[in-house]
Image (tube, rainbow, N blue to C red; front, side, top):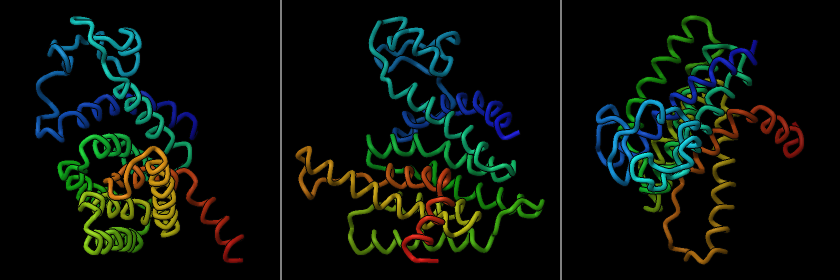
Length: 258
């Protein structure tokens, strides 16, 4: 059944991924994500329906606009495919449909948020505020129906992960409030499953961020160069969603002797 749910979810993930490419392009610019229709970023020609199929449309056109022949960034199919894989993958890990849906939609946001933060150094409030309202409402409904979520741990995850990054942002002045809100969202959703998931998400983000900083130094970026932390928070959420229980179990057994 989990494979069936994942297979059914995959085309929905592709469609949502296509929408998230629009979000990643237009939200930082303050534009509508509904109108106008998708257009070539070079000549402005409207993309025909036959060319607007997620991933396949880009492959079919060989990454070029049908009208002007300009190259279309590979970011589009990468975002579409990664979103679909993460969205459907959640149903492979979590058998409860209510939990699977919550994690699928959390993961759906991660590629676009990472891409926006890399390019624009922001995590838009237009994404964070609706998510911070919608997920608690959804999880509360899921809890009332009997899904295996914990609202108390949801609140603890929200305050602990978001609060910790708020302190870092306040003290260091090097972290934006968008990172704080993203951490709060991740802590909220993963905390509803168990606080160990929040711990793994935070630990993975720190480790991956450290590796990214070392790589940046090796590539010649100065120590004071701004490095967006949003992609690492997003990666930490992905790691914890798929392997959080195993990592937490390994840590407790081998490092704490529990």
